[in-house]
Length: 334
Image (cartoon, rainbow, N blue to C red; front, side, top):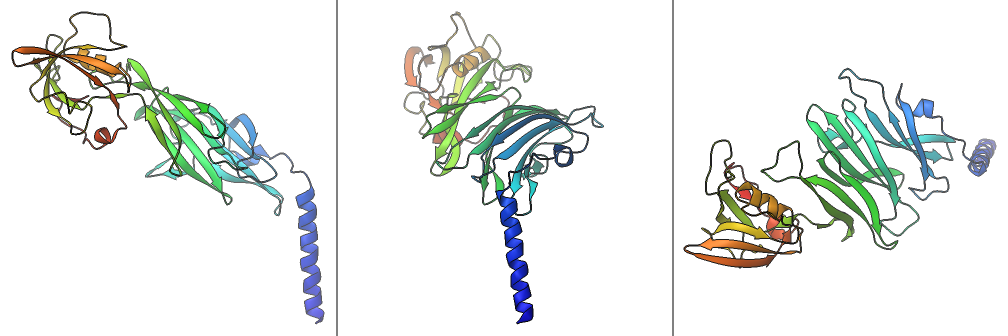
């Protein structure tokens, strides 16, 4: 009985101390101890991500030159533990793996872009959204990352990876927010280092998951090749037309085009006002249009010339996503 009374006293004392600590305002986190060694803090933001009383602290930092002569960077989220009376790192982009690789490679040059906090799910908590652009041995790319916080743990709710230079903004209403991203866009005939246009896509909640709601890259549903080819330009020389070698089922082109059709011209809201565009330039003309727009094709079918008009689909359409990527350098999918 004496032991039980002493134990009860200790437990009550512990709860009293914990309660007293919980009622004390949280001190500012010691960033020198929490960020990676020798890293310089760039930004410190506060947001209620998990819904607890004390907002989380979001820290971005940059490191010194590594052995590759590149500056790594990091994004961390610190959460206040009232019982232990300390700040804990609940998210560290350099330590999180997404698939086979780290979310942010500490060996690469990394630039942390915009950071936002969005109520994708109507609740007290918010999701962390940030853009990270990196340059390493494999080239440059940008990632758009959405991190959600549930039950004291962080998880990747959405991740997009694409060409260097992608940006985003928060759009939509408070009840249905969305991320509208702008990214470089190139076709198979464009130089790898010179994207000639950009496209937009929107990310939001659908069916309980974050996913792409729309994408304005156009989809016709044709497999084409140049009527005049060379080893240097297998899809067609500037003097060639485009011959249809395949039509994707259930695509916008399925009801209008036939195998063997030769495309000799394209007109649309964004078509260049130039005469005599042939070969690869026609692929660029198609790519310059937006999903949902009506585009006219001048087609030679046998000995006759036809005018075919159709409404462009999106690369997120089922017929587009179900089309297997081609490895034949002589054929392009539009």
